[in-house]
View 1 (cartoon, one colour):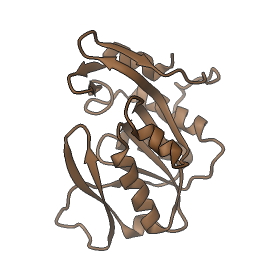
View 2: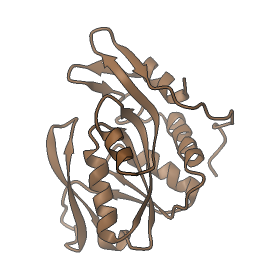
View 3: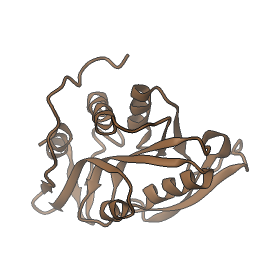
View 4: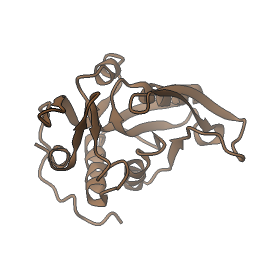
Length: 206
């Protein structure tokens, strides 16, 4: 069992409707040490690929993506879900359905921040049906860039997103993959994954 699976068992709460609440450490209150460990784990898993840009989607993926960007020393771009007064018309736009919020969102990235020369590592906190990931992939493809890999903190393995992305040929690495969870018993079962070599993930990132 890896550090993130242990954290989910200690602090995660299962809700009806196949919802896993991890807002005590991941997507509302952020446990910086756990986030740092995730960044190191993504860097380890993708150590053999060239990356010159990190892409995520607002809001919960930003913290993880920022620390991954620090390790790679590359820019981090996050796709926005809402227009603002200073939003540019010169942007790539895609559409994503949120499993958690049960609604479609237009997501966009301003054109200057993605280009055909980019080798993009996509980072996000959750993968369920894969809608957000496919929207980010679409944005990269619109720019002419390359999706170098996809890193996910928590994958719901009982839903179609992971299997679909792998069948499409994408390099997908999920730190924790949930095989099943039961809100009545609060039991979570994880998919077995190869164990990483022992290393010190508590070193300062600088």
